[in-house]
View: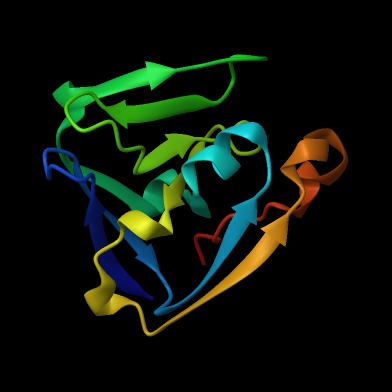
Length: 128
């Protein structure tokens, strides 16, 4: 495990996660992720630290309202959000991580158009 840093486009929102250098990201085909080209990595709250920009985050919810889509109110980038599948963790946009600590990135498709049938496939990084 290494510390990866990341943030939004304007730099007001910054965060760190603890994750492997070799990252397997999910590419979801749901209406939200596909429109924003989101590549997700779910981490537990203990592996996530918001470093700056909490005052710049705005929240968008829809459907069940469980997922909290957090956007920078200045540049509009969604660097991370609270996912419906794991509301006690974060889904981090791997595209928003600084590249220096990523050794390898592989992408796994996820059928979010049929979320209810496939939500159990989302597995966060464990705290072990």
